[in-house]
Image (cartoon, rainbow, N blue to C red):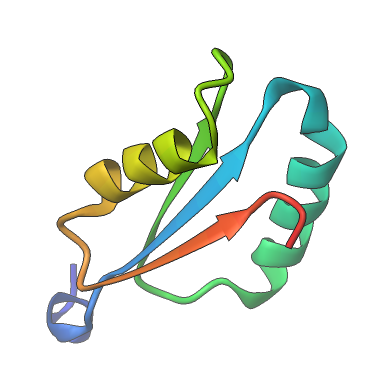
Length: 77
């Protein structure tokens, strides 16, 4: 890791999806590849047990808690 990367803030990106929405997450990932930041951590939470959006967003937050900035998205944004 170079010096610039070490000092750059880390960006956490969390995406919430469910198993029956694969086309949305595929489209989201395709777009993300075009605009992704340099120093990021991506976490996609697939709510396979259908516990709800709030549960999924909390799982993203737990996973990304070490990041300096956190952005949460739904798969259809």
